[in-house]
Image (cartoon, rainbow, N blue to C red; front, side):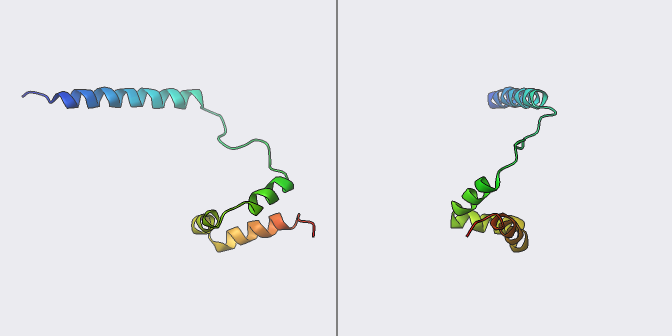
Length: 81
């Protein structure tokens, strides 16, 4: 049975993709993807003040109203009125 040439191309692309993925996994093993420096209260306030309505809707959709409300309450405790 004759093999489709596009199957050869797909196989080579998939091999390359797996090689790149393995290389990235080895390179970044045991590194944290999160920031190691905590945000200051001032930076958190700035982020909330500059948050768009769509972003807020996405946060509520992802984490729920109660968790987002608690986070906003905790950050707003640092606000000076």
